[in-house]
Image (tube, rainbow, N blue to C red; front, top):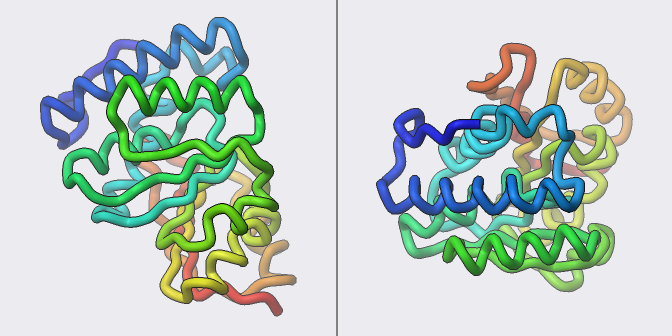
Length: 206
C-alpha cells in the first residue's frame, strides 16, 4: 500500500494531493465498501496507477464525465491531475449517497477540479449535457457502458470514452458490435498484462 510518487511523472504538488487522497480512501474504505477489500493491500498499483493512465492517454483541459465513480477511481485521480494545468473539470456521477459523500470530501481536501452528482447515470445527461471525455472503471460490460455514453456522443461528435477492461473484453466487444458501430483503440494497461483501456470514438447505434 506504500505510496511511491516516483513511479508517476507528476509534480511534487500532485504527488502530495494523490498521497492525501490515498490516506482518505483507506480511512473511508474501512467504514464503507469503496472497492473490493482484497485490493486494499495494493491501493497504489491497483487503483492509483491504474487510474492515472487515463490522464496520460488524454491530457489537457477536457470536460470529463466519470460514470459510477465509487471510490474515486479514476475520477478523483483525473481531477487531481487537472490541477496541474488549472483547467478542465471532472463530473463524478455516483448514485450511492455514502460514496458521494466520500467523493465530496476527497475533492474538497485535495483541491481537485471536480464536482459530485449523486444521481443515476441515466439521469446524468440532463444535468451534465456536455463533455469531451467519458471514463468508467469496474462498472458494467461494454454494451451497457456504450448505452450510458451514447447521449454525450450525440451532443458532441468529438467525444471519446475510455473504459478500463479486463481479460473478458474481447467477448464484450463482440457483443457490443451487435448494437453499436464505433472506432476503437486498445491501450495496453501498465498495471495488468491482460487488461486494456478501450478508447471509443465515433459511437453510433446500429
